[in-house]
Image 1: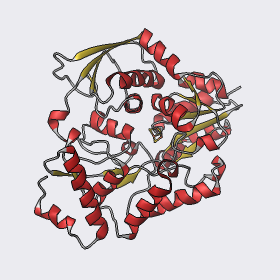
Image 2: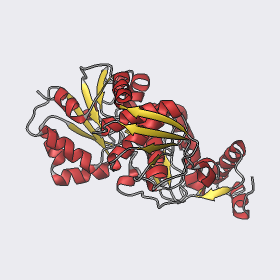
Image 3: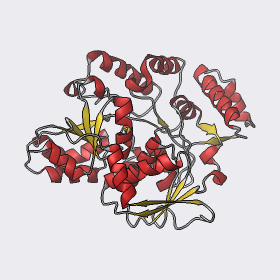
Image 4: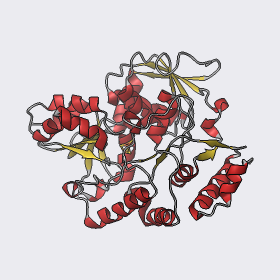
Length: 392
Ligand code: F3S
């Protein structure tokens, strides 16, 4: 791989963390056949939850921090394994919290902003079209590539950190324009009336196209919340990191000769059945990916003066919760008996150790991950039906 003089200097830098980061990136570049590095304007650090990275992950981060690792570009942290303030209210154990806090401290020491969210683009970290970035969380990667038009591969925790420290990443995969063309046409002929409808579509398409780049036709309307749910589900059931929605994310693309797949009412129904394994959740969670202020408003409006007979979590970032507090949405949710949970979600927190076995979700991504990663039986449905389950 060709390195600039400056990049070669980084391999010999006095700071061991910079040397290590640069070495890691050049090795990755060689593995992926990259010809050069590309400068990135922001990074998203994944592997924040202790549940995901365990003790080896803590060691890795603490070593980097000890060696003088410091980010050189704006870098934002993915969700942690608990609400970093209200973890006791979540029944997180002291031992888990201690380890989680060590991860946060190491990241803070390196200058990573503890946004603890998978939707940083909703309030602060908004790249521009064609900007090269190094993000790591699969739903955020998908949103950045597809909706914003920025360019990122799905980085792993170590490579995102190395990119954050050096401000570079190997130029391969989705950083190259020739790899950003559609691979399949998805003809949608089903009503996608809700976020769960987009989740069902995404879950079905991800399994069908795996790491392809689907081009959707027939979707008439989709806002930010629907698109983040669609991309998240495709990245979970498959490994989709870039998609196109005709007339919504792109005007048009050359799709001649591509394989066509049909998603109609029948496929939608089958996907709901595939993901829905219980009608009796103990806990209902919204916010995978983390809720926007509009989603929180809609949930709070649904609740009105209801009383809960089961648990409800609304997962979001601290930043969006601050708006929800100001607007009175948090109060409404709490008065009805629910919780607005920050910094984490039901997938990356140790939900399986908290005596929950059955979880309700409207997220195609969560419905794919909860059974395997969290040992949960899932109720997959729309917001209204899930809220019915937790209110009398
Ligand atoms: Fe975000 Fe957790 Fe879902 S990290 S995309 S809310 S699994």
